[in-house]
Length: 143
Image (cartoon, rainbow, N blue to C red; front, side, top):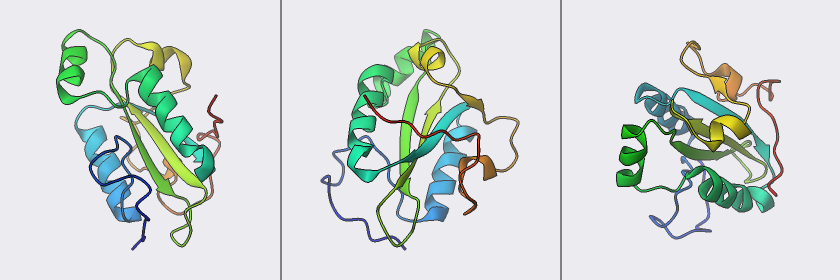
């Protein structure tokens, strides 16, 4: 079990950081089962992780409320959410991240190189098996 320090007060962040690898896998699987079809992912140093989270929240609406997400879905717009998890269970750096995106139009679909999660029976390409980072994940430096 990962002992994550409280950098952000509980319940105040839109960044989801699961407590264990199995919780992370379950969260991603549940999100895909609920309609999220596309994803992008990578590895980022912990120092840059909050800038990346703010960038995704500001540009792609990863921090949108449930009512905004419902409105966007009804109008054919893509919704996105961000999940982060430490690459090493014993340390907090670097972090793996996944940007999960629903079908629909939006800037996230134009700006990011998204992969389709619907035809992938296992989540090995997104790094939850303990394997090394694959070519399908790309590291991103926030601007």
